[in-house]
Image (cartoon, rainbow, N blue to C red; front, side):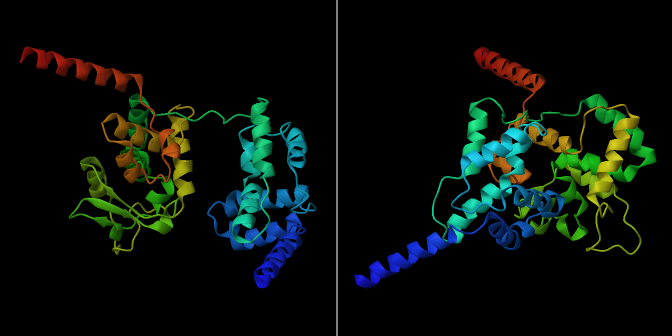
Length: 314
């Protein structure tokens, strides 16, 4: 019993000492242990951590409070939009929870989450406007006519993305060994996905025909890239230039994924089935892509009406 009491005192003492750690020291540990291993680290994570250290680094874990984050937000929201603010502080928020879960830091409310709630309650930030842009048939026809001679390689990637809903990076990393022509399925390897989870994608006939039309370079084998693009950004640039030449405004390559997912939903696939194809981890993140159109809803209503009429005649 005395030993248990002594151990409790030691644990409390260790938590108290940890609470005196500065945010700068904690962020350094978090960066080494977790953040630097994330895919977004080089693109934005490193910059965000540097900014967090500059503004909160001297505070200790115990001292950092909601009001400190609110004060920072009041100034920062004069420069950035409300949607960007929570994202900018997401490494700090995650680090604080990581410290409690894995490093034995004393439990306390997350000041970042609380500050974001304050701003939302006061109407100063919101969840942002979810993007629902989808290409029209006319826009896809224009891109086809523009690229079929000038850049058939980019056209193949665009058509494949629209048919499979795959991310640009996933498409560019595909190798011939990932395609099983006996089953008509593709394996997207975990190291090539945003979620770090492998998945198998059954291809439609159109997607299979797109692959069959790809011209293999001399000497290419199972380990060769299917579409020949080593840099996904090159595809993005080629897509933007094609859109500019076709006078298509506001369309991004990622919108092709939105189009594919929405079509799957409209065709009658369940959300669970769509999730297998798209590779989304959560249903919440998937729902923003599964946006039905008025045209699609009308077609379903007319189809249901037709079936009722046929049933009444029987």
